[in-house]
Image 1: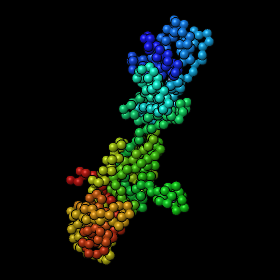
Image 2 (image 1 turned 180 degrees about the vertical axis):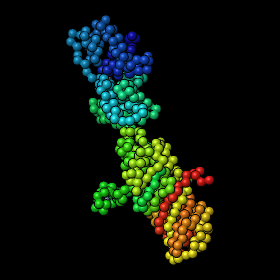
Image 3 (image 1 turned 180 degrees about the horizontal axis):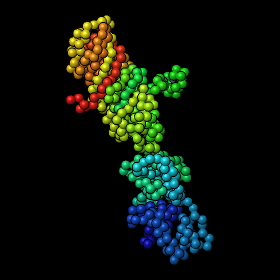
Image 4 (image 1 turned 120 degrees about the horizontal axis):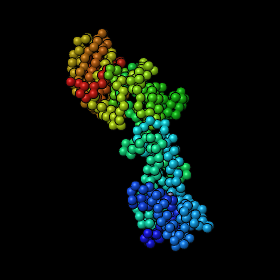
Amino acid sequence: MDERLRERLLEALDRFNPCDACLGRAFGYRLTGLENRERGRALKLTLGMLAQAEDDTDALELLARSGLEEATAVLDDPPSPEPCGICEGVLSRCDEFAEAAALELEELDFDGFIIGSRWPDRVLDRERELWDVLETEGEPIKREFNREVGKRVERILGERADPRDPDAELIFDFRPSLDDPKLELNVKPVYVRGRYLKLRRGLPQTKWPCPKCKGAGCSECDYTGKVYLESVEELIGMVLKDAFLAEYHKFHAAGREDIDVRMLGNGRPFVIELLYPKRRTADLRRLEERIEKEVGNKVRVRDLELGEAEDVRRVKDLSERSLKRYRAWVVFEREVSEDRVRKALNELTEREIHQRTPRRVLHRRADKVRVKRVHEARLIRHEGDEAVVEFLCDPGLYVKELISGDEGRTRPSLAELVGVRAECERLDVIEFLEEGDRG
Ligand SMILES: [Zn+2]
Ligand SMILES: [Zn+2]
């Protein structure tokens, strides 16, 4: 061994008392196929042999203090081993940490995992100082820890560590304490996409927290924290969350219908994000049936399939590109002839509608004029002052106002063309056309 290297190693032992792994890691990229602890032990053994040959008790004592039993054995009055000044003993506990990790991961259903770690600055600073003394550029402690624990967990669980696309990530946070790290488990969400039907009016699409208490519960909301007890989101989410043993769910849909509007026909596309799932698969046909059985008078789902993160953006984009077909129950102020209604609907067909933000949504939407197109307008039924009509509309066209005219804010409107005041009494979305659905 080079004299200069030997001096530096003895200085490092004196200042940092590194364990085999921390010493070996400083030379972590020399000779492959070795574990750092083997590298460190090889260096310590070499130093020990040289020290014994020269009767260098000081050096042997440093080695004994750092845990080299061979040095302890040859000394008359050896010092007792002291914890590593870099990792403070963490790297000698990899087996134990791997057991803890396996315990956390065991109850999960996953494909590929990764072990991560976070370290206090003092460990990283001392590691850097050690390398400076040794004039090396070693392997960071984080990499060694993650790899060593990962290898052990692979052996315990028979499950592959996969850094490219892991479903589960377990992070040891040593920042608060090196003895007792905090464990943080991150699991990739599961995405389930499909289409939903809303069969009951008065049901909001998403959870609607009480505006007064913001969900905490108050006298205003009967201590439910909600304006409406149920929503499409919650009715579907409840069943899926349960099936995937998830902790939370987030609901994303291709637009939304008003609370008093039903969503029928082929349903509206949605994707539900299940967070912290313990299961990653389920029999989706059975889940559709379960939803039908449990809440089928309010909500149904169809075409459920496992999705991916990208579906969230996709489903949102869809709402801006999809035409919707509506069925509306119209009430005129007085009796009108079928002929007049038919004529008005013909005029609305393939017509551009200039629609200023409806008064009812002005509190949450900017006041501006949108130009949208009605593609089809058909009369289904007419009697006296009532008519049932169907419209196929551009996305974002407000149909209630297309009927009433919203006091001149929507032009033309059915009321304007018939020449009699009209209101939309009930409304259903009966078809959600995705791009390409329409010939
Ligand atoms: Zn160490
Ligand atoms: Zn409240």
